[in-house]
Image (cartoon, rainbow, N blue to C red; front, top):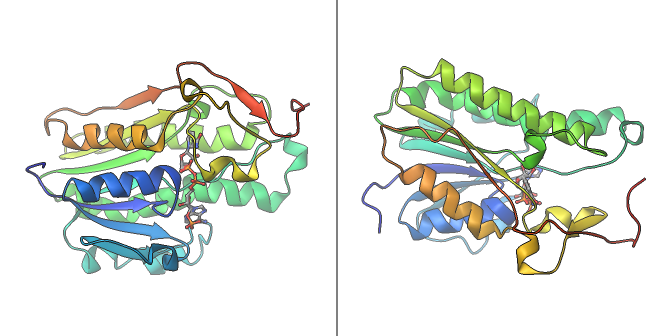
Amino acid sequence: MHAVKRTILVTGASSGIGRAVARRLLAEGHRVIGVSRDIRKFAHAREGFDALELDLADLAGLPSKIGGLTRHFPNINAAVFCAGIGRFGALEQFSYTQIETLMAVNFTGQAFLARALLPHLKSKARSDLIFIGSEAALKGSRQGAVYCASKFAVRGFTQALREECGKSRLRIALINPGMVRTEFFDSLSFEPGDHQSNYILPEDIAETVSYVLNSRAEIVIDEISLSPLNKVVNFKKNEPPD
Ligand SMILES: NC(=O)c1ccc[n+]([C@@H]2O[C@H](COP(=O)([O-])OP(=O)(O)OC[C@H]3O[C@@H](n4cnc5c(N)ncnc54)[C@H](OP(=O)(O)O)[C@@H]3O)[C@@H](O)[C@H]2O)c1
């Protein structure tokens, strides 16, 4: 059991990385506010868990929904941004709306949330913002123009915000995973290979989040990148992307 109990907002808590993070933090005795577009997904939620319904793609509706967040949850002192969507392909295969939605969910909606939480978090004796970036935040790759742009945006945002908050006790960290075996790949034409050395488990990311949160308050872990030991990609239709 960890000595310091925190109240931590976790986006994407209904699936994959965010669900593993929420479970891990609850098991460590922290309070978790889990975000999903549909809180009925949290029907079997546990002690210490509150659910919050938000659609990060709805940028127009977001400010009014998150404006009162810190009044409603005054003990909130950390957030882990795990919500995100994957869509890959040539730029011309994207509709304008698809570009807008991907950027909203993977970046702008999270920037709105950080904006809403920031004054409150900066007033705390100890607080953390942890973003889930990606290996796509480090290097542009084929079929990834929009996805990489959304993750580069997150990375630039965290670097600049860390500077901006450098006189407070708010720490800002970015975690960049390679392929993690989650529902993320359900709608994609590829997935990590089957061997356990071909993927990261969502629990590995949860452990990394826990390490960052529980690190000594006087240090900042800027960024952690992690990858599967052996990178193997399976193409579901038996054909590589063109
Ligand atoms: N899996 C990987 O290989 C991998 C690698 C590197 C980085 N990442 C990043 O890790 C993050 C989590 O991915 P994952 O693998 O855990 O994917 P996942 O299992 O598909 O989970 C995605 C989560 O995002 C939430 N979400 C999607 N659209 C949303 C919206 N409009 N508003 C609010 N929440 C929304 C979903 O919640 P609801 O559907 O309940 O709203 C869900 O909980 C993403 O940012 C992804 O880019 C993943």
